[in-house]
Image (cartoon, rainbow, N blue to C red):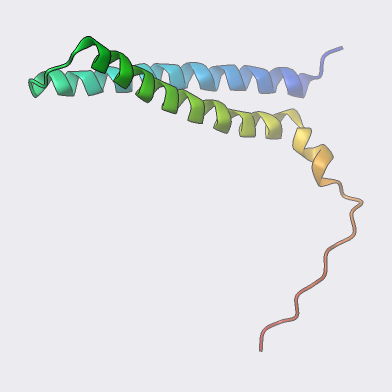
Amino acid sequence: MKNPHLTRAWAQYKRLLLIMAAITLAAILVGFGWLYATDTPMPLHFIIAISLAIGGSLMLSAALMGLVFFSNASGADDEVIGNDAPPGPKTPPRS
């Protein structure tokens, strides 16, 4: 039997990546629209490089942030925290 938390966490992660892919595509198109509107010359290699740079950085940051949310939603963080650990030393109040 599948873990319902894990199934829901994967669904949320996939939805986040799809939304970010749409936002990334929109950001690339807006960037090129602005460059086209300002009559900036754009060689083919420039278009490829800028598309990969914008798309890669946005999707990498979305994937890493999504993994943080996935870890929390799947319950993996609950195993690490553990309630049986003794409390740490208390710091004395400042005078």
